Amino acid sequence: FQEPNLRYRADDEQRTLMSGQILLRGLFGPELLSSMHNDDESTVIRLHTGDYSKDVLSINSAICPRLDELQQEAYGSEEFRNWNETSAEVVEVRRFVKEELGLDVIPSSMLDCLMTTICTDRTLPDFVNDYDGSLGPKSWAVDQDQTNANGNKFMFERIANYAIKSHNFPYQYNNGAYAKLGMGPLWKEIVSNILPIVDSVNHPSSTPPPKMALFSGHDTTLMPILATLGPDVWHAYEWAPYASMILIEIHEVIDSDRKSDFPSGFAFRLIYNGDVLTSKMDGCLEDSELCDAQILLDRVLPFAKFEDRNCELTATSPEGGFEEKTKEMKTAAETLVESPGGVLVVICIVLVSAALGSLLTIFFMKRYLQNAREGKGLISLGELSMTVLEEYDDAYEKGDADGRSKPTIYGATAVTDPENEII
Image (cartoon, rainbow, N blue to C red; front, side, top):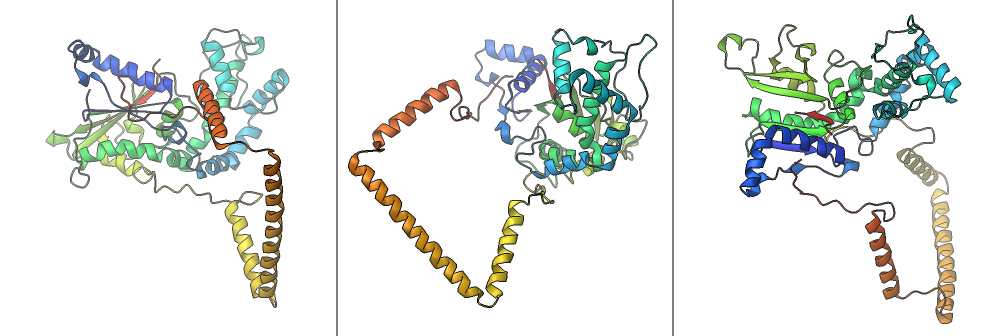
């Protein structure tokens, strides 16, 4: 369980840290206990994490603005609007929510609201208290009344299914462009552990690659990861269950009779919650659980990027973005200078601006000096410094100084309710 044999990566969220901790304890429990009993300092397992607001274990538009643009492009597409506005099933669900809850739009938080209520055995409102698990996820093609012979309308599951489809639609739209851009940095981390194994000549490593790499993330980590592997691998109308897991195994092919099927000399196997999905990837054999590793790399390497991915906005907002306004100002200035008498106008503007700035400076300096003579409005540096420090000390004890939490200490190590992992 020591590096480089094991590499443990998680975002800085308590539940994902504990998820990885429980999994590692289950895998290495006897070894960890033995080391602890022997007072072995190597018992500690190193954890790799980062600032949550800038991490890449989930799609993060805060560090890649173009993600918001791609998401809105998906929701504005004719494909989504046709489903969302004309599907008989969607129209019925939206009518029901409007009448019972007074909501014109079904919010993205609806799924969390339903699931956290029913999974903690709290009472549901009567109009959605009809869950029996018999309906299950329904494909995009379902477009009919789903009331059963007993009169059960399955409104709990129908609302949940709508919320799931609506949330997941951007993942697969436009050949998964949104998911690929968002999960590119994570795929870069994943393949950095694979390339030194399958192509050590072109990708040498100063240290041996890990025999096991564990990434502890969220349902919103696994679903877009699966979406990047092709439309047949994962259906966007299904939500990743609690404690889901993706396994990517790398096998060296030593059987000479099978090497024609694996020209790279290495194979991979893709498993999701116990189901082998390898054959669902384009280019892989339908009747085999293993597929040539190069097919996986060819699939993900084009978008497995971080610093060099394209995160710039390509469209102009209705109000015009900063760059657009800057271009307009530059064009206007160039037009003015090139016009007859334009240079003289520019010089006059500069002189008037300088004069106004000087007058304002003199005015405010006079007021400041007058207050100083009268002893008004002045705080000594020592008094100010002490006040600020005391306020921030108190705020940091509460963890909310100006909305900021205490700084995170990085480089920490850890031996870490299971959530979602990629191995």
